[in-house]
Amino acid sequence: MRILVVEDDVALGDVIRRALAETGYAVTIAGTAPGGIEAFEIDTYDLVVLDLMLPGLPDGGMGVCRRIREINHDTPVLMLTALDSMRSKVAGLDAGADDYIVKPFHLVELLARTRALLRRAPRAQPPVLTAQGVTLIPSTQTAIRDGRTIDLTPKEYAVLEYLMRNAGTIISSTELIDHAWDSNYEGFSNVVQTYIRYLRQKLSTPGESDIIQTRRGAGYLIAADE
Image 1: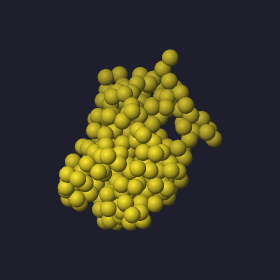
Image 2: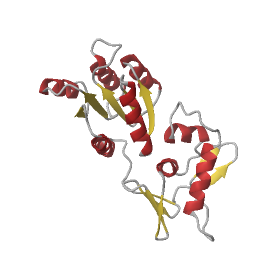
Image 3: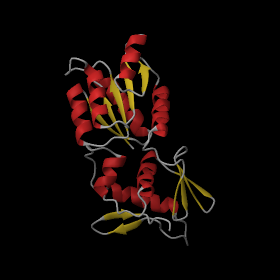
């Protein structure tokens, strides 16, 4: 899943980015109100983590939140602020935020609120995904095949989850990078091929079929169950 973080404090933004990325989310960072609006206008996100006090607009994060709601009514918005007054909380919620967390906060709380918002979102996927004899359990980021539990790293889970969520559709390497990493990823070009290999090694024991198909020149596919 993809998360947009709009935070002008570079150090805090990086801490949030790393915490979310280590959990398996693809994260995009914007440091100003106009930058956050532009990022949301040109891409699709499952959640927005939005600071209230942002440069670039007179009403800062409130203006960003209102613009997000003009574009999309469903994307969850988690608002961050150092202001702990009831008036500020009410104003944030009235602007369209779904939840509110006051700085300073613990990362475990941020991650818990993130999970809760994603579960409640209209786009949220079923609690269990199944395809080709494999069951994927998002709550534990594990896969089960023939009674065998398979532990996955956050990136392995992100890749497999996206393929299973889109079972029956060929997914390109670029699309997988955008989903499991982020739009600014500049690492080695065969990262997707590497993680597909990791998944195949974990998902299939000798004698078991490979559920991830390679379509040369197009991408990867997990067939949908009939």
